[in-house]
Image (cartoon, rainbow, N blue to C red; front, side):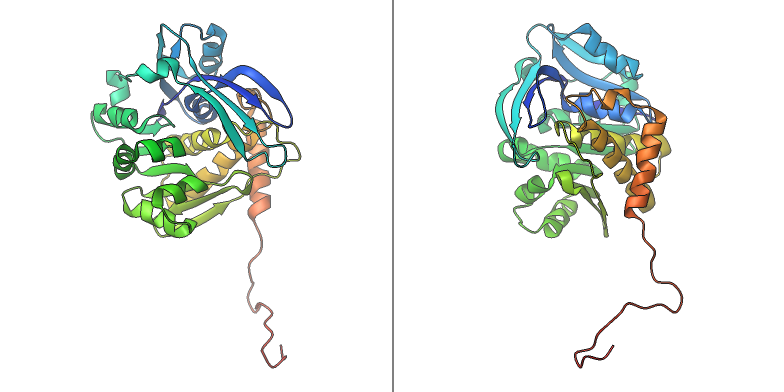
Amino acid sequence: MGVLVVGSVGYDTVWTPMASGKDVRGGSATFSSISASYMTQVSIVAVVGDDFLQNHVGLLQGHGVDTSGLEVSPGKTFRWTGRYGAEDVNSRDTLETQLNVLAEFNPTLTPEQRRQDCLFLANIDPELQLQVLEQMDRRPKLVAADTMNFWIEGKRDALAKVIEAVDIIFMDEDEVRLYAQEPNLVKAARIIHDQGAKAVIAKRGEHGVLLFNQDMAFAAPAFPLDRVVDPTGAGDSFAGGFMGYLAETGDTTPGGFRRAAILGSVMGSFAVESLSVERLGGLAYQDLKGRFDAFVGLTTFNGLGPGESLPWRNKDGKL
């Protein structure tokens, strides 16, 4: 059924222990829309400045992404600058954020976009996320949102309304704890679930993700890689893969959510193998299938068979 992605498109300047790049392609909608495009039709709503290069629009279009909702405004494109730790590539410092044209962004949906059945509100101002929801002709069959600590600390009330309205919320594990004001991740996810979101997905970097879907919990590992170049966009790529699978299959059963989590992890693993979207943007079907199958091997083990039991040593020393 396709997915409508609303978020940011911009340029990143990044330093990691493995590489660095100035004004490389970034933004939540960039990563998530490319990731989802491997599985389903994607329409994007975002804004860029008149300095945004046409061939960078072409990358999205080359993936079949409908860019008719990509607004070009006078001024500079959104920019983010960050540096990752030499000892822990999952830790990063934001050195500068320039909202530029994103500061005045007022997303306006076309009649076709307002009828979309699957909506992903990528990481932008929760007030803009609410504006998009209010424009929908009817509530989409599936609505998901991503957010970050900046909005949790600065626009908590608006974010609370988003959480009440969506089916799925994506957050880093520290953001789950921050929003819920609860150090225990399981309890924190339950608090957010009780506020409205049917599924809470806690992204845990190199430790994978935890999916809390009502009374079900599922842990998906990160794919073991011997070289991580740039973690920027991994979470957005995860969300794109997750939503792309659900949008195309319509499978919102517990099993469907688990498979979507693995596909999201697959897409996130490709994203970190290069700066920006270089690796993510050039995948073939066999890349996805091979890594998905590898995940199955990574997470599968044999349970106890008939007549088998776990070894158990009693306190008296007898087996």
